[in-house]
Picture (cartoon, rainbow, N blue to C red):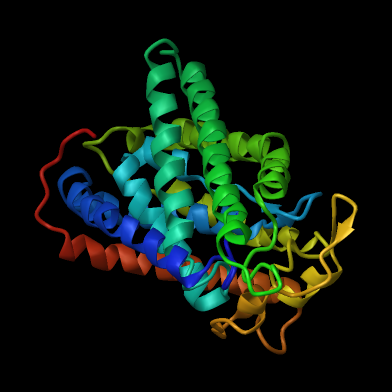
Length: 332
């Protein structure tokens, strides 16, 4: 679901980034009021869950990619504004250090996965939670919210892709950026997320929430922090498993190499060209591109990238704990 560099026009990226500025401002203000200082490092671990879940990035039939995000999970544990901030920081780390998601498209990726997803998912969760009051009902409500959230986020990404060839073309009528219109981008994106990756998001959200309910139930209370040892243990297990994300072959819509687009076949037609804006657009070389580390086997590079990303997120949120004080403990 990550939008790579140059798939959206610079003007689209600017609009999406501007739209997120007041959201980020509000998220910081809400976290300052709602999340106790002692829970901030745990919010960093929750952000790491999102980061690690998004490393399992698997191409789907039709050309898109999908993965679990965990935004609804974080919203349930810490509130939707905290989830917005946590997923935004995770996306920033991915784009800056690993080239997963574009720097210019950062605002659009955050709008989809850090804003639409957790708020929509949390709204569905809260609605169902009023009727499903048992521990099992909590998991059902969480799974339903996660499913709705990730599909609305995928729909937003599909629309952002699909309007590009309608708005930005060259003199020959060729798309300058993402070349697939809405009638291709929406079905291609939604087919996978309504099925496989909607299910993955349900399993990820409900599974981690069940683990928290069993091992650290105090984390579900706004006024309790707990040690969080069980969360650190789960993060370590996810880090070890991240090389499973390497099992998929190929890329989606030329995600890592736009020149692949020229030969890709959609609905019986080969595109036949590489969009100029994608071929000659903004270029940024990440320190660990594609979660790889020079001279290390891919699996070890993936694990090391997971360790680096997780450590950065924990450190960032520990630092934020001091900058965001004082706080008044209150429920979202």
